[in-house]
Image (cartoon, rainbow, N blue to C red; front, side):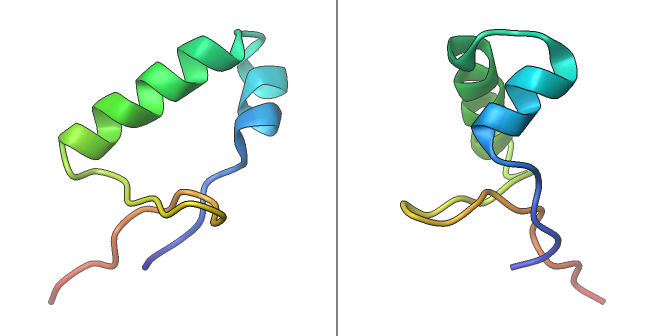
Length: 50
């Protein structure tokens, strides 16, 4: 995995949005293969392939 993004609670505070909005945004990014996530781990940007 690549660089980690902030956890849901931090994203809520940074962007002043609800946890539902953050979860939906992460789910959308995951569907586009722009972030990876595993239960119990912070989401992260995928490692770049050379």
